[in-house]
Structure formats: structure tokens, C-alpha cells
Length: 312
Image (cartoon, rainbow, N blue to C red):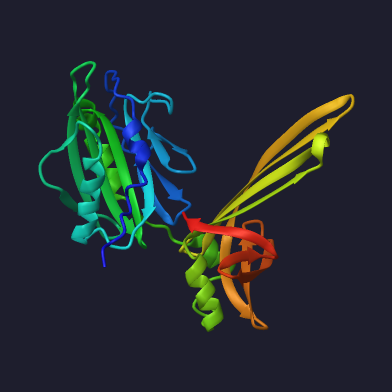
């Protein structure tokens, strides 16, 4: 059975801007740790910063802003069916890079050890058509719990050479996150894992997935409200949630709208009770919420509301 392509959804890789400034380098030895919501962590230079987006985490060295695309450093993720040590993983990485116009492979793919296993590094070279400067794309990729983690770097070759030590150290530091929130809550320990078929069925269905709940209400010309909630049920039994809502009112003499974003985190587990599956979530503030899981003709419902289950 052929392996499903798993890196080709990174289509925005091809959109980086190829205008370049002079490189800025740093020798600061201090490092910080970023705990990714999908259950892994990486370390980066203390004078860099991380701009975490919904689709990726962008690494910003000193003097580089998120809007300045003269250099581009991103941490990308995608669910995968194979480990980084599998030759098919490297083949998929090469296939991804081959779709970028004007770039060709430089040398052979190299392997390196990470805290969680094995990583692979590939380099592809091209030319800035405007300045005729040599540019490169470098990708450092590994896997953690069937999740591909790719450090994507793009820019002028000389600038990437100046960053190589920092980029290599970031790639080497990728490791599975210790589920401190889950452990401290006691939700997911060997003693209380529900091994019943019903609980295990739902666990396999939802673990490592993103749950999306959407709702809206309209009162015609008087306004309405809408909300969207996304919950990431990480494989290490932690979760992150984000809710967005907006309300609009249109009445004679008074029109207005408001909105807001709320975030939450904690630990989760699934257990069976009275023949029903329960999703239990314990928030960092100590609050516990239990919700009924239902399968209705292949569709997922939580407390009677339709939930869309997708890959993170």
C-alpha cells in the first residue's frame, strides 16, 4: 500500500520573499525552550523570539520582524505514517522541495541525532532572479509520535551559513514534551487509564486531533452572534483551547459590535461510564469539565453539538 504524502500541505513554503539585507549574527550562548502545543519542544537562542501562529511557529533572530521576509525560519508540523529514520520520509522531503521552481538539491541528505531519535537535513539551491544572488532552502526534519517536525530556513546562502550553528542546535534540540500538566492533574496515569473497548475506541479516534465547534445565531436585521472553538487534544494528554466570538447589534439609534478571544490549557482523558464515553478535561485553574461523546452515523458530537475532527 503506498504511503500517503504527508508534507505536501506546506504550500506556503514557496511564497517567501527573495529580497535580502546584510546578515546579523550573534554569539549569545543562552537558550530558551519553546513548548509546542502539539506535544514537543525545541530550544532556541535567547536573543531570538518565537511568533506562534495557528499553522506554524516563526523564529525571529535579532533585527528580523515577522513582516521582513529577507530570511524565513519556521517550525512546521504535519501528521506522518512513518518515522524519520524510514527512507520514505526522506523521499517525501525531496518530493516537497522538488516542487519549488528554480531550486535543485545540493549534495546528499544528511542524518543527525535528536533528543527523540533521528533527524534528516537537506539543502536546495537557487538564484534570486532580481539580484542574481545565490539563495538556499534548508530543511531539518524529524518525527515525534508520528508528527513530522520541520525547521524550514530560506534566505541568501551567506546569511544561512552565518545562522547554521544556531539552526543546527535548534534542530538537535527537538524533543517530546513531558506532559507535566497531565501528570500533575492525575488525569492520565497508568492507574486510571480506562482500558475498556469503548474508551479505547474513542481514544484512538480523538488523540492527537483538533476538535472544532462552530455556532451562530442571527436575529435578522437586529444583529447576531457567532463563535468558534478549537481544542487540540495532544498525544501527551495535554490540551490547548482557543475560542473566538463576536456579537453585533443593529437597532434604531444604537449600532455596535464586539468580539473576543479566550485561551485555555490543561489535561484530558476519556473514560466509559454507564455505557457512554466521557471526555474529561481538567484546566490549569483546577476546574474539571466532563462532556458526553456521541457517534451519529460517523459524525462526532460532544454534549449534543456537532464537532469537526481533523488532523492538527
